[in-house]
Image 1 (cartoon, helix red, strand yellow):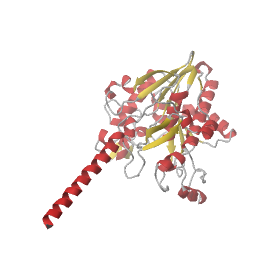
Image 2 (cartoon, helix red, strand yellow):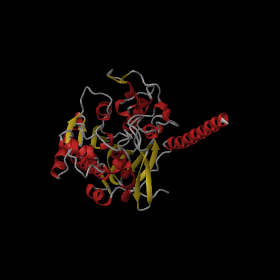
Image 3 (cartoon, rainbow, N blue to C red):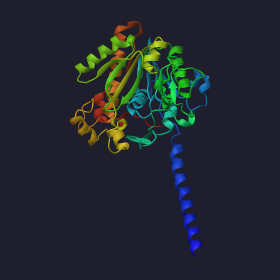
Image 4 (cartoon, rainbow, N blue to C red):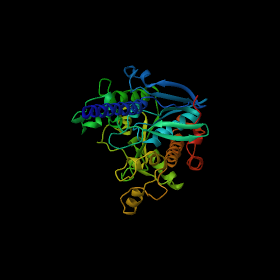
Length: 377
């Protein structure tokens, strides 16, 4: 009788383990299903990154490149989102541009999910939600909430020390999977270096004049709610910051550190003719002082611990009970982008760029992100 009971218990535990494995396995595999992005009225063609660097074809590094071309000639500008897949205002801003923008003059190239591999897994040991769901007039749109780095299954093992090419700068071993430490990239390098090489090839092949990379940072991080600029972009960044401040949008300004290598606005600014900028908004789910880590924090940006931290002077942005909702962070990015394009056009009238139908900060504050997301086919 005792042996039978043990056998029944063992079988029950085994069945439970199989069920748990099936459920968690299905959840894990769902992260490999690419997000639906609906090409808006301004999209004229879609390419894959592998068309610029064929070695990426069929790999987790391949990603969509959207073109929006105006009827009038002008400059070519590009926008990068999803360099870090756990920074949703960056990739969501890029998605809203793809689904809404119409270019009147020049060309716009958008890569909403630069680090496609980073979207296939969540950040280990951070209890991040795997997805964020946004209500729209057409139903719920679901998007993957990924990781800062590429998935370890696509490049393993991490070295003890990552040596950046070509500077020789030494970084932590796991930074080998960080796309924003991999530029300018190389064709036979690490996984992230190959993706970086492909993105650099887009800027070179398409003769991009201006590139902006969209990011987020924890509230306790000093470079936040700010524009970062390569030396060749400092005039544009300075004028944009001044104009945004005049419109009561508080924003900082910082030049790319010449000896901190691997970042887009440093290396793409050095290795391509494009003027390169990088932007950061405040994202509490990334911080170390946060409380409950869930989809609500990712969307609403409200956290009592950060309210207290701000009172103690531990944050570099104001933080009250309103928090930093995703719609506000996306609105900041899009408002700054519009200002960047205007200033760039004023300074380079032979390469002027004009785009319309991009949601403003006020519109996003009032209507929310879902209002501007299209119905998937």
